[in-house]
Amino acid sequence: MKKLTVGQMARLNRISEQTLRLYDKEGLLSPAYREPSNGYRYYTIRQSAQLDMIQYMKSLGMTLKEISQQMKQTDLSLIQRILEENKRSIEKQIKQLNYQKRAIERTLESYERYETAPPDGSILIEYIPKRRMYLVDSKVNFYDYEIDVYEQILRDLKETLIREDMPQIYFCNAGTILRKDKLLRQEFYSTEVFVLVDKDYVDETLITTIPSNTYLCIYCDKFEKEKEYINRLLVEIEERHYKISGDYICEVIAELPANLQERGMYLRLQVPIQMPSN
Image (cartoon, rainbow, N blue to C red; front, side):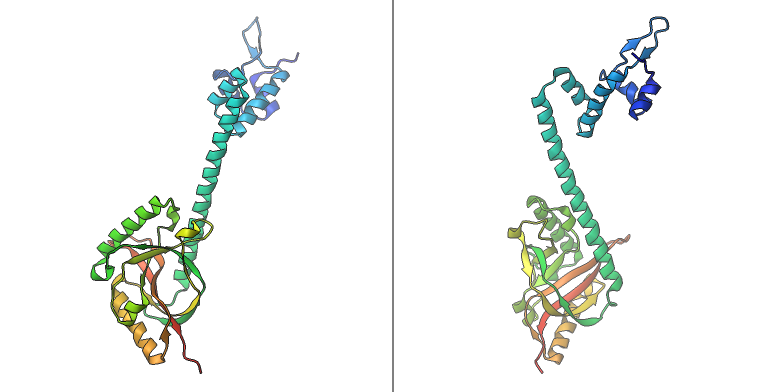
């Protein structure tokens, strides 16, 4: 039987000598033969079968400790339990990676909208497709307070997302809603905050749909300007004889990473309208 050194055995099986020595140290695969004259130890080609099994079980996600335990006991029920646990772990990792991928996509979309958005104060008519939101009533009228209260409302929103076991990728670009009846009376009273979500990642029962519509929009670069800009929209609507057809939405187009004392936001303020027929 041909004797193989550590280097020869490693090259034959395309693994490193360091890995072979680790397997030897852990008692998984030790050289089969010791030379009496000099004490050198050698592997045999037949041991490649055992090495293949070790490498295969590693590819299944088993630890060296688990592999050692399995090879000593040859307990198929043990390996089945280990593989079921590994399968669940991989599924969880895939889910988290999908969340992370979607978070990256949403952030890139957000920055692209910001880069192509009109300058602050611009008023436009825009058609906005159907959107899905997760909506929470904070019970606090944030128009009565400064941005610090808004930040506290966002903390509560985050806690709600966690309780509902929703992906934390959605805790960004939170918007607000001012209901149509309040808007018509020019009454700045709103307690509802939302985040836009995807149907593939959120239970349908938690989703509120914003139908597609034509909106009169104004872009805004400061939280403090919102009331002023809403009034500008209302003046524009009256002058053009538009009809308000739904709730006002304050959507955060992008949250800008900056070393500021408060959140950097670029806003799109939106009022759904019906235009007069010619």
